[in-house]
Length: 425
Image 1 (cartoon, rainbow, N blue to C red):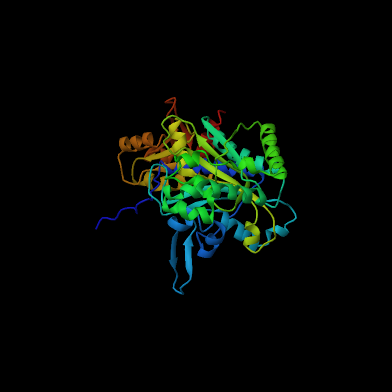
Image 2 (image 1 turned 90 degrees about the vertical axis):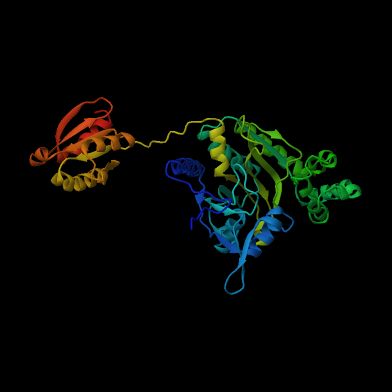
């Protein structure tokens, strides 16, 4: 029987994995600069965590979660997003008592949603995300957005568009909710079954419907910006001011609605404008939330965060044909002639690696010509050739594959010579 990878998942093979490692390293480096620390949470959580945090009216909870019962009948769910787990850990480990606030966290790991696979979207996908928990300062909103943009820009992306909106505080959202109900109620029968349920549960979610997004009532729906109270409007103005201070370009989109129920105030998305990227242009999204920490059993403190798909990140890099400076070449290939030289090559290889050099040798008993072909495939900078005669003199022939220059060096000096040549000395 021939087994295949499950639908909606993928194998990331050597040659591809280096690209993933590169952008993951960029994310980690930027987080280090901004003083965000890594958190690693379980891949599965109690289902109730996502029901209470993500929201029962969302597509994630209603249609996309991988949930199952364990052997004791407890409902367990593979995490569909990272914020709920991070906040759960924040509360459980009493991070709100830490001397330094806000607590700045980041995560990188697999998430799971049962949705229709398409370009850049998988049922198992990898997210990088951050959470800054414990501050009401709008400057932290701008910092979070700036961090996300910095990650993309450091990878060489240029065709980016940032859109922002305000969802207001609870009072503003309540007033907007009533206006949306009045707007949609007379013709709600024209909408999909999901939207008909959302009218009572969370009418804001109608604006985010994939099926009815082109409906004229969605296009003419009252904007949340018209219902912001004085405090919410002032908060949004301050966020925009700080973005301008950080030289982050943005566009206000009054219809931007994040798909999770816990957002309030600032919401944002980063999109790719690269030609040929595809119909779904969103790369990352996030926003501010209050009440979520309290819902998890902690104090009533706010947070803000975002998540970005690494699959879509790589797709945007491909669309822009951005070159990733990934070094796949090795420093030295150790070639040998004869059984004694073959045996000695093992310790020579080990010596090079302990000196911090990337090195390889043949394990297929190839002739010298075949070993040189292997060295070419590995893009070896140097080839060190060991024969029976050289071995008697404790010497080895070192060939520079760029210049073609050859020299005989002592085996004990081989690593030092290569390091010196690499550094241009």
